[in-house]
Image (tube, rainbow, N blue to C red; front, side):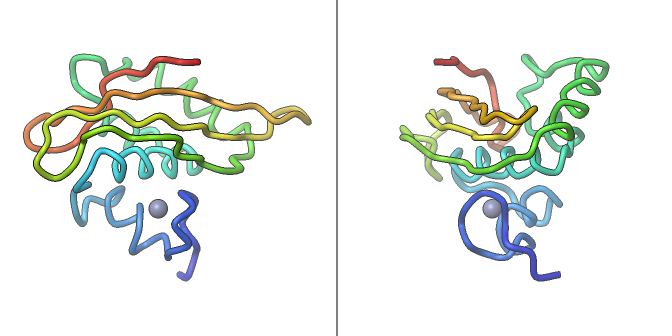
Length: 132
Ligand SMILES: [Zn+2]
């Protein structure tokens, strides 16, 4: 499989977000985790989306189902990283500001969010986001 990763890295999926989504390796930075979550959205991989969510803010399974249906119903176009703060290999917390563009019902939509990431049990996880 030589599929280019959806996150915009121009790398093969299996060497990029695929390695993180499959659990082959952990995200080193919160930016890597953020990109893997975007890529998981493009695949409507709700299991990974819940797994990479902090346990204290993780949505319940039934809410996951509607997220999955929605993620499948739109056409994911592009991830634009606007900015990121901390969240590096030696940090325990970080932020990523991004735009996720998608096509829904003939129109371009976007999620414009500043997300908070923390480490839980040593792994980067998504905590919460502020929408613009
Ligand atoms: Zn990727």
